[in-house]
Amino acid sequence: MKASLKLLLAGTALSLVAGTVSAETLRLMTWGSYAPEELINKFEEEYPDIVVEVTFSNNEEMIAKLRATGGSGYDLAQPSHDRIFSAQQEYNIYKPLDLSQIDTSVMSENLLEGVKANTTIDGEVYAVPHQWGTSGIMTNKSVAPDVTGWNDLCDPAYEGKTSMRLRRTILLGTAFGMGMDPFALYDDPEAYQDMLDQVTEKLIDCKSVIKTYWTGGDDLAALMLSGEVVVSETWDSTAYKLFGENPDIVFVPPETGALAWIDTFAIPRGGEADDAAYKWINFVMRPENVEIMSASTGAIAAVPNGIDLLPEDKRAAVQAAFEDTDLENLKFFANIPAGIEDMEGLALERIQAAQ
Image (cartoon, rainbow, N blue to C red; front, side):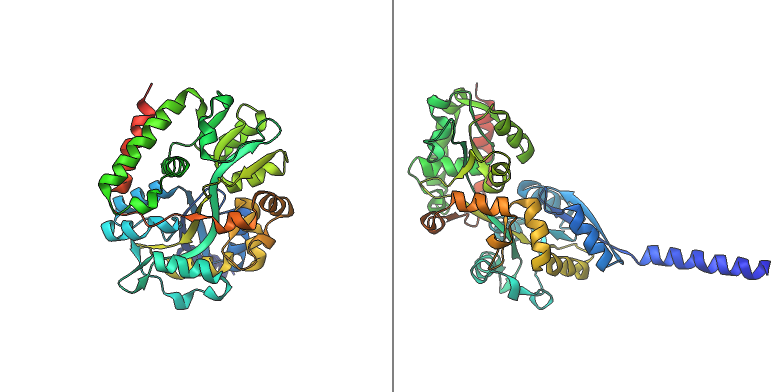
């Protein structure tokens, strides 16, 4: 009996070890709030042989990390639609998608076709859409009711009460506010540099008005809810979240057009869990899971009824922010040519260093 018991325990131990070894890890690199714990738990319950490991990041970091490793270290990434084409051409950090493994029928056709067009290289598609939204202005309308666009961030009337993030979005938005179209200048580096110089000078002059530069949605939310800041550059999803806590805080699509982005699914070149990555993509795009995801992100899923799948408070915030004319006036980020981000980085460093 003792011998039998020893054999039984040994067999159990071996099966447990085998189970551990066979478990696959999906290494997901994504934006903050794009991997809510509720959704991860639900996925792991459905696929008990897959463990989800999340690294929160942003566009610049995603490119830098994948460039440093030759596309290894992660199995699924979520860069924005305009950050894939040139990064792939320069650094070869992604692999083509097998679209037969993705249920693209649930995706909004215009967003799907737009992302495919933006990320097709030599006939191969490198990304599909996940969530979309815009960048623009957030205001507390009880104290700053007349805000209409990018230029209000530097209005002396709000001195010490405005904020922005020192990333490329503020360069682009300020350019539009100054009457220029930065996307139309992408193919002319000299003209783009001239535009950047003008924007840089304006944003340096603006430093006397700015309360602080925010770095993430949480610190921006704290600034707005406390009243320290009443006007800020923002992602619309951050404004939607705050609208539920204070309906005076609203998103304002700039009169020149809100900057529109689409966050995607892309598979790094050195990814080792493609099957798990495709399972995650299809899983999170199901309607019942879109609701969980959108409640976490505040962004709109790239599905035909994406706005309807937002929580009630966020859906009300979208409806309060956008008229049909605002949606028609969206300025979708264009593919970034090689070298443009280096130019922008130098401009941002100048602004940061200026006294």
